[in-house]
Length: 368
Image 1 (cartoon, rainbow, N blue to C red):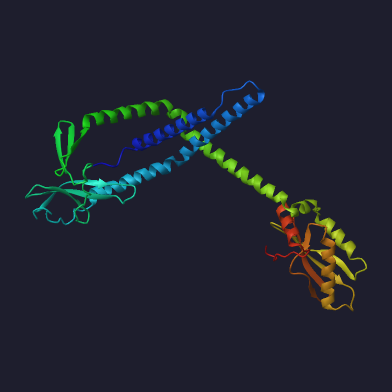
Image 2: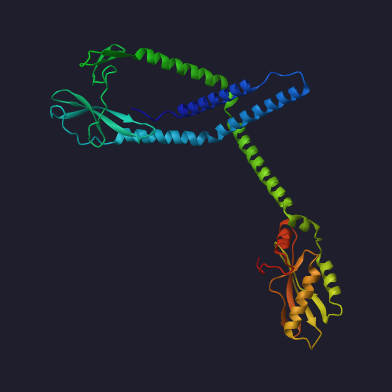
């Protein structure tokens, strides 16, 4: 038994299913559509309905393209597993005939593959003494079949088989009430029906494959376009959420001051405070612009703690309307020199973060 097929088999099968699914979708949309009316609103409704149906079909074809390689890989893996089970499952240690206790011999094997059971082999065995045929499971146990019952009296019936060329006849006889019935299986008819369906499927596939099954280029275009739509949708959603945030409007209203403007503003605030000689050091420019500074304390009588505390309060108030903040390390004091760092927020996201912190003193550390 050969379960592994040629690559073209899987490709044709998947595309055939795609064609059938798209044809069903089109037939359903045709049933749902209403005849075109004479009024403008009826015509507009008809146009939008067609646009919606075309869009649905476009995404259906794209979805089938995206899933194709994975589905076919799963099919191939499944068939390889079945082939491995069929080829390599060992014949179990056979029991003796349950009728005459004779020795059994394997004459055939059958792979059982039901959706609700794990695939496994059953072995057809024949007694070399009484010629009775039976089925043995992988574990060496006999397969127990439920006996067929008479539809008249519910007694167990006897089953016999006969074959004439391509016709197999199965007869069920009841010894209790004498009722009998027969089923026939015409193998030639079944084979012709199967070949007829195959031919119909091939015609269907040849006719509609190019319409419903995307080429590699069309498929990649679909993947690129849908990815771009997802990115754009996510972007606009995030932008809408951002604009709905109260801190967004506040951030938009904050003036972005240059370092020269900040220097002028701080110098102006230092008048008559006892702090002099603001000096800005070389800036650290990365994600943020961070500028170290020093200021001289001219009030000799002011304590170190008061000097740091008063300057910090002054800078917090001065920088409040701007996009600059005093960094969290605060103010350092040594021998009349007060030092610290100023940090500029430039992007909308950073300004929103600054607004949400609700403080003029930057809450992140100097390495952020």
